[in-house]
Image (cartoon, rainbow, N blue to C red; front, side):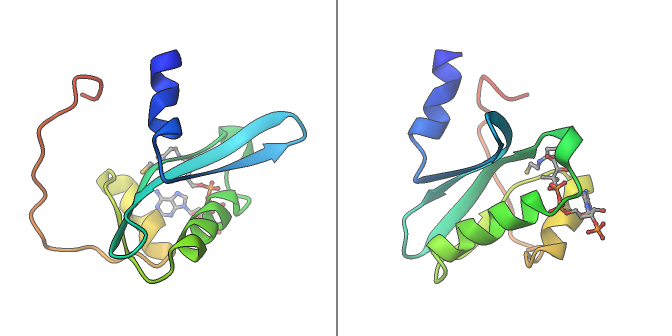
Length: 103
Ligand SMILES: CC(C)(COP(=O)(O)OP(=O)(O)OC[C@H]1O[C@@H](n2cnc3c(N)ncnc32)[C@H](O)[C@@H]1OP(=O)(O)O)[C@@H](O)C(=O)NCCC(=O)NCCS
């Protein structure tokens, strides 16, 4: 678990949502703060989904670096969610070397 805290610790920005002591949502961002910002790991507790929390977390992220380009890599079935929140699909080719932690 310690190792999997590191992506959050090493992020430019982490915003979390809480119901009293309970963590119910989070998102992290890697950004150069000028040109480009990338959304990672937006996740809302299933019990709290559909209440605008994801939308609010995205909005707060974008407000932190409003002049940068914003990118997110996601599955096809989630892409509509980001489109609803202002993102547009791009035709650019996406290339990767896989992480040993992500299949
Ligand atoms: C995707 C996710 C972050 C959305 O967060 P949320 O707080 O539930 O979403 P919001 O309340 O901001 O928005 C809800 C609206 O988005 C819509 N929506 C949810 N998932 C959607 C999808 N995959 N495609 C299109 N619209 C979607 C809902 O129907 C709802 O519409 P309504 O406002 O008209 O009722 C959340 O469902 C989640 O954590 N999913 C699992 C993790 C995940 O896939 N994260 C993305 C990684 S890149």
